[in-house]
Amino acid sequence: MISLDCVTLERRHFSFGPVSRTFKEGECVAIMGENGAGKTTLLDLISRLETPSSGTVDSSSKVSYAPQESDDSFFLPTVLDEFSYSLRCVRRGLGVREEAERLLVAVGLDSSYLSQSPFSLSGGEKRLLSIALALAMSPDIILLDESLSGLDWKGYRAFRALVSSLKNSGIGIIFISHDPSILDLADALIVLKDGKIVFDGNPVTAMEDGLIKKSFAYSKSMELLGTPVLSLKEIIRRVENE
Ligand SMILES: Nc1ncnc2c1ncn2[C@@H]1O[C@H](COP(=O)(O)OP(=O)(O)OP(=O)(O)O)[C@@H](O)[C@H]1O
Ligand SMILES: [Mg+2]
Image (cartoon, rainbow, N blue to C red; front, top):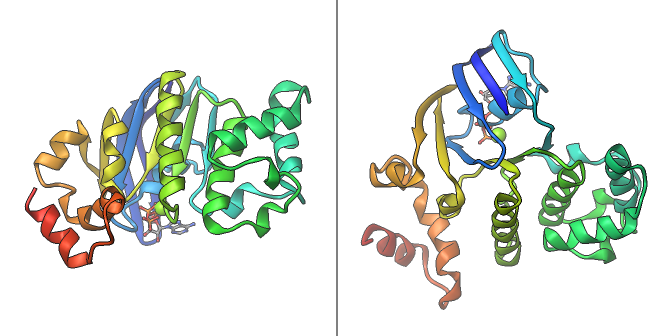
């Protein structure tokens, strides 16, 4: 469990909080909000990458983080090296290769990536690898910052399947996304605006209230990808008629 109590963060041009909230294992929380609203800042505070200006962050959980910039996850020559490092932190080198392969498959990649440099992968592949490396740390709670961004349809489906299976295994998930089509997987939605929580509750309520409807158009295109290619105008028409 991670508890934020009256947490604030003051930056030169940005004030965050105060935020008081508890995050638990087994809970799946989505975070949404406009660019610059403070979403990444919230994850940085939860993970203790950032120190609050006031208030406290208490954690009894092991937290791992797939950051918004995937390159921040990597620092070794090959993907296998990255897994060896992460897995040794938790289980002393037993079956590293097998476990790395299992995690790659879990995120929709495969063992062919093991010998490659993490920095040489495509943007979407880096995102998926970053999630797999976060999982290698055996977290109680995993933080995913815009992991869906730039993923193709296959990656999108792999991400959905992964979140569902993590939920079943009791891991806590806190994810940031601009795509409301993933919200059905979330138990709760936090919406941030100008560094403040303006909504914290059932994602369905937020949709019904129109709080997040504006960003629907492009996310809906994902859902509609199974059908012949649609123009943006047609997607918006369908969304508005729902
Ligand atoms: N290292 C930093 N130093 C100074 N200001 C920062 C720093 N990181 C972020 N900020 C500022 O804090 C505010 C919130 O940034 P944050 O990264 O949390 O936004 P976000 O909601 O994640 O946005 P996005 O959707 O674009 O990722 C922004 O105004 C940003 O300029
Ligand atoms: Mg961000």
